[in-house]
Image 1 (cartoon, rainbow, N blue to C red):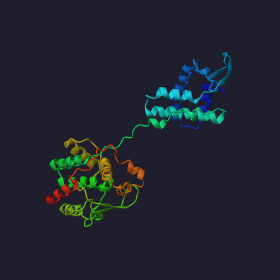
Image 2: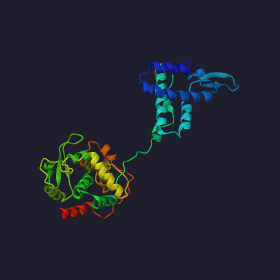
Image 3: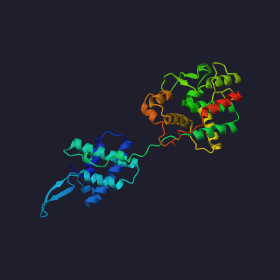
Image 4: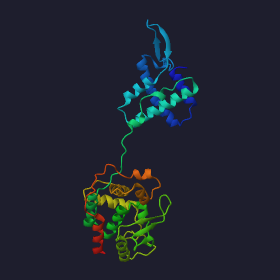
Length: 319
C-alpha cells in the first residue's frame, strides 16, 4: 500500500460521493490521520496503514510490521466520547467509507469490523412533542372562557381538536354537511394519507355543534369554523389563538399539532390499545402512532374532572 495521504487521494478520486460529503469526510479523515501521527510519532506522509505496529522478538529485533487494527480506532473514539452525536456519526461514516474502500481494493482487513465502539450507544434521547395534562386542559379552556372575543367558536374549535386528535387541516376544512349531529360523528373526506375516515365526537357534542351552526346561519356547504369575515380559518389563525390562551393561562407554549399529541398521550394514559389510537389518528403505521405518545407525561389517571363534559354543559347554557 501507498502512504495514507496517497491512499486518501486515490479514495477521493474513485469514490462515488457528493462533493459536500467528500469535503465533510476529508475533514474527519484528516483529524484521524493527525491522531495517528501523534500516536506513531511520525509525520502523516510517512504513515502506512499496513505498517502501523512493529513486531519484535524477545531480543528486540524487528520481525514484521502489523497493520492498523480496531484497537486504535476504539482509542480514537474514546477521545471523542465527549463530542456530540453528530460529530461521532460523521467520524464513524468517514472512517467506515475510507476503510471499506481499502478493503475492496487491497488485501486489507477493515479494522472497523471489530471495533467495540457502537454508535447507537450515543444516540441522543428522542425529543417528544410537549403535551398538555388534564389539569392544563381545564386551565386552557378556562382561559378561553375568560378572554375570548368569540367564545362559542373558540371553545368548540379547541374542544374538537383536543377531544378528537384530528389534524388542524382536517378541522378547518370540515364542512357542515359532513357532520352527523345525531350520531356524534363527522366524515373526513380529505386526509393526509388520502383515506376517508369517520371521527367520533364526545356524546352530546353533535347536538351542540348543530345549535352552533344554526346560530351562525351556516349553510351545508359552509365550513364549520369561519371568521367574522366569513373567511375560512387558517392554521396561522388557530396557532395565534392557541398561543394567546396558553400565555394568558400561564401554560407552556405548544403548537396546534401538539394538541394531536396531547390526544394520543391521554388516550394511551387511559390504556387505550395502540391500534385503536392509530385508527383514531388516521395513521397507517403503529410506529408513527408510538411517536405521538409522550412517555414523559405526568400520569394522572385518577384525575376526576371530566373536562369535555364540563365544556359540553357550558355550551348547552350558552347556545
